[in-house]
Length: 445
Image 1 (cartoon, helix red, strand yellow):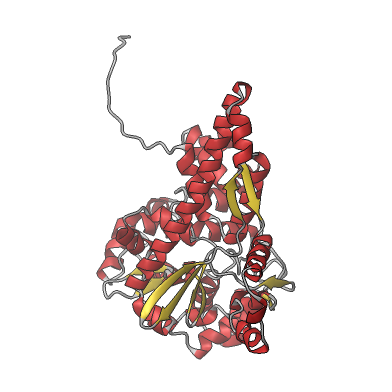
Image 2 (cartoon, helix red, strand yellow; image 1 turned 180 degrees about the vertical axis):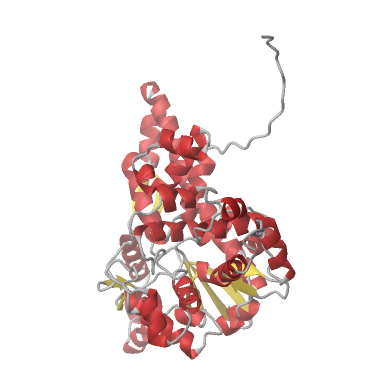
């Protein structure tokens, strides 16, 4: 056997620990970021965190200290009442998850009376975990409609917040989470659908052998699945706090103003006294450098998150000007890719930026996720729902010549000819999700 040396060039992208932390901070909701800030403060002595309420009280005391007694009058107090933060007042309101879900219905346009009836029935048929607690056959019989119609309404419900609402099983709950992530590993859905027990047992060698995949790739997929949320937070019969929007857009004298809502986040700073104490002590040199590096990474990460959200809002005003002015009736089809192209960033950055966040417009508060249509753009610019596309795919396979079943590429070409812009890979993904085997297995299986 002859041994030879061979040189090859390979370009790889390695994310720095700082960039990873920035991306992690970007995807946090307001509540998650607050918790993360306190966790980092407990680990790092250089960080000083001021609670949002304490910060608010301090600002109020400072204002009072700067006012003279002569400025106080009944007229003054009455005018001040009009300046109370509306969101703070709304925090006192409590609403059930059921009401929370109903508030998201108007976001979706062109729903018929039958659609609304089915959607309402599905929402009222959720159990304590917000899982669907009724068989679709019962819904079909109740509304005298087709199974695919009910499935399409369920598919719509599963796009609502919180993520996972309307799932019929734990497996489907995980699949819904994965469906929200455009960069989920390709085989993750198959691992969840067919081998969740092996994933739970972390049987990576067995999975590697079964799917003929490298061990390292299997480990990444298992790690991804293990990091999905294990359950929906909350009980549908418990009250939930009023949604705190991360972004507010308002029109003032004909111009749009963008405001980032930081008032409910604690303020973070570096303790200068502690810096002076550690910086000049040689025995703490490494500890000080690591602590300072970590503290700066947190501050820069929060700043970068604010910058990304601001740019998102600015871009939204550009792409969805009519929606911002009028409301959901004027919402145009928009994909993550569209926003990413305008901002010059990767789609994954937009995906992280909109996760668990809300925007307050003059006509209401909306989940950022709801502004992006769930489906594929067809040749006319209209977005077809995933449920509709899956139904079309299923009908093609049911009508195919059983001796010469349609290959994924053939199905892709047929759907594209009908105006549905879809890739062969997406066709394969949807086919696998519906547990339909490949054309080869349909012919010889």
